[in-house]
Image 1 (tube, rainbow, N blue to C red):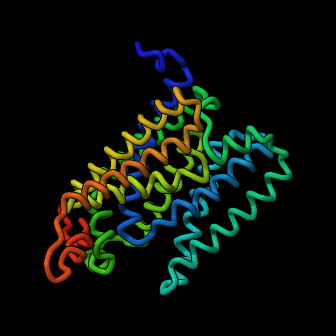
Image 2: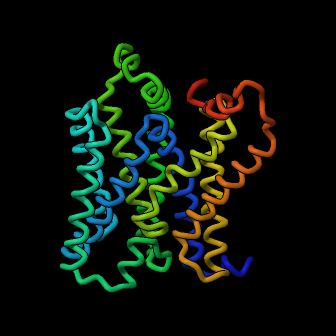
Image 3: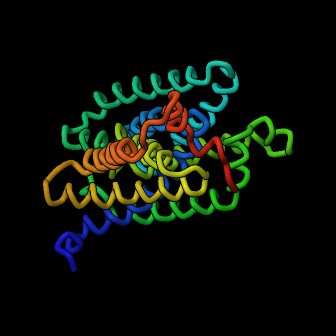
Length: 289
């Protein structure tokens, strides 16, 4: 057995990390293609406030963070409907409220610097057996929901009005997607941290969009990059004594930069400026089932 797997806390970190590495890009691709990339940041601030409230009231932080995030996700969709022509405004409102509440709670709970750092940037040392059970169960539940309603989410992503005309309950599935996003963010708080978890929902997807034209291929690449980012990031953080959350995100960024470099080297310039047009073509212009 490799040295890194001889430590119980690293075994727990890899279990949770793999789930997070799969779920974040899977949810993230639906958000990115709907121009809702900032939903992750918004719900992450709410999750942080939930964790702090749990600590203040001496309630298990993870379930409470999940509950609060799920509750706010419904409010977020309501605001998105109210500000239909200014969708980003609803994100800004909720993010500001979550951040303001978190700052107040940090002072009230008198969280130690170590504890605060773990909340913001992740701490694999704080993972408990209960966390592993809850995270594994909820992760499998999320994947099952995505599998069962894959076609509905797909249709909703590319043609919301068409989905409505086809009889799909659009509002219900919008709520469900935001709920799943809230769940994934709450699950990833301990390993990646509140300030970084949303990056794992976006960066692997951004890298995958450089490679694939169809939706399914893009999703598979995004999940692959998510898993690689977690595995390489956790391994590097162990041997180099670095913060796991930051190392995971930097790994995903390096993968993206490497792909951009290789793509730039392989694509030869075309006449008439058509190169720029080609590079801008992404998978959502050619959806597949």
